[in-house]
Image (cartoon, rainbow, N blue to C red; front, side, top):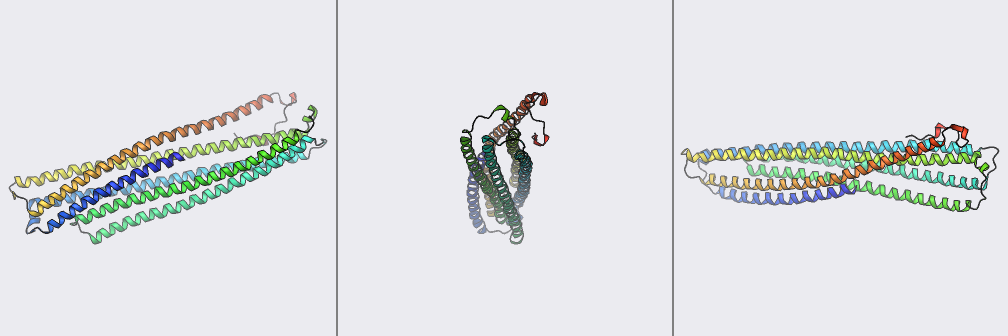
Length: 449
């Protein structure tokens, strides 16, 4: 649906803008910290690590590392839960499509068998002379039979193609998900080998890489689904055009036959009650009933597909919002915890331990300031991104709900029309055969409401 494609495009642009801003902030902060580290390396470090301030500096970085680890846990939970729900949604959508496709196949087979039976009975009518109109009615029936077979062939081919596309999409999604987990595991393993607990820059670099992998793989999953959805939509449009062409050809052929039929002499009322005419009327009614039922099943399918989309998209949005709030709460908690540690660090001077900061203590304090400003800037970007995502999601959801209501209204109208048709038939035939206007009830041609 175009609304979802537009929404996904907007969200993709928002996420790309966030990625660019985050990368700029992280790069700038990394360069500043690297410059400070270079200066720190020039300090005389004798006994520095044993001072009061140095001890609190270590605790500050340990606390920062703790919250980075907790944030990564939440990111991993978010990605896993969202992907699980996406896969579940796709499985449900496939089930709906296959179920409704099978319903149409069963309906077409049942109605085709009924039409064949009535056609054979009509052809076997005894005592009736084939009128001029009967001849052309038979031609119309043959055109309808051939066209119905062609439409059904196109529909079944489309279902096969769509199922193959969905299978291919599932394979690509599974590959991307495996790549995501593998890449994240490799990053964590490399950190354990190449980094130490004392190497804050190494740890932060790994944290940035982990976040980058999460975003890149998430974007891959989104884009691969958009690409395959486009392929499915294109296939459905092509199939619809093919069916329309076949039906236009049917209409043209039948109109030409009716043009010839119009030259037939008027049929007397007595002849209209012939066996052939009655059965020809049944053929028309069965075909109309079949078409109404197919339209109903298609409408039910579209309604169910839209309901499924909305239901699972709501679940995905709940997960995203919950995990975002958890990370925001964690960031707020981290800010308070780090501020408390900095306050304790400042008490070193009050306790009479070294009135003046050493060279390394001064650099460490400056690094902490850079990291704090960096984290605050990142927090602003993420909050603004979240606000934009919620705004776009809410607007598009309202549009999708409106479409859902329209689909349900269409389905309701189809059912009401069908009930009116049944009611008219019952009213017409009330009193049974005594009125002489209705054939004996044949349940084999009753529609499945």
